[in-house]
Length: 186
Length: 186
DNA sequence: GTCTATAGCGGGATAGAC
DNA sequence: GTCTATCCCGCTATAGAC
Image (tube, rainbow over all chains, first blue to last red; front, top):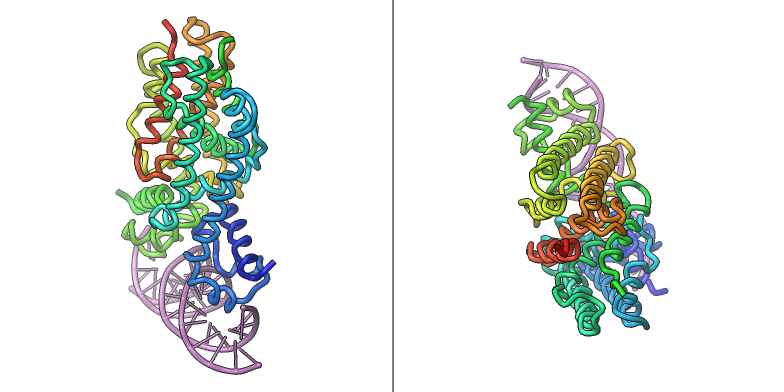
């Protein structure tokens, strides 16, 4: 792997583990096995490298979700697949966790990819809920975009509950609860 | 207000705004209008002061929730009151945001109050859901503890969505979506 | 391109005067 | 109790050699 590549990958890992404020260039360099010079040759500095890392993580997350949500099955089943898809629950969401970072939220550049990812996810989920309404699987009274927000919130909040307790169980409980509310009567 | 008191309050504010890693003793002292000596006289160091601050925030949050959840109305109405209660959405949850902090999650001392608060909230919500089931307001097929986890997750995740987009709208949408799923047919 | 050296600044804590 | 002085270390960045 090329040096810039290793730098980006190391940054992605550290942003996931420790967030933006908690991630130092030094730690990135150690993990990437590179020297100071390499980093400042390929990137303008910490924010620039972080932006590259965040963009890649955002892209990857959309790709993963696109796969799961575009899979086979009824709308309910695809949402269930998304909610139950394998996750490193205790590590948290590599995108969502960035929203708790004041330096990320305070920078339009860094927040951009985060916002776009979550927004895209929300739209995609809303489409599926809408589809479910048309097929009579979900009640017509439901607002597709609201339900989409609820689904995403349940996931993002599930990480919080899990990390608070140190166990993935709470995440799973929240997901099961939502699915029981969403489940078609049939 | 006494000096230790001011130190704790300043720490609470900074932990909320910037998290644990992002909060320096220096910033706390400036905000509290105190010198280094005061802080190290009253507290053993940053973790000790943070613990005092987190404990107080946790206590306060439980008290607030106790008030809302113990209010008048049907179980559904009390859950709705909790979900819709006034919040500084864009500031995030002062307790939940700590779960994204590796230094907090990595310390049993610091994580303790966070875990207890969320756990207590979950139990309290579960009691209310159970009550609603007994009264026939919620379907008997629902698992009270799972629904409680879903409710909490929706709130915690709502903060994430809101902060990502820079607007409280997404929080509200998630809440409305959950309420529409929870609403008794009546 | 990558390395090391260096720099200025801030984090976190201690010492000791008042 | 509170203050200032001081310490060591790590963060972020720049300079310049190779």
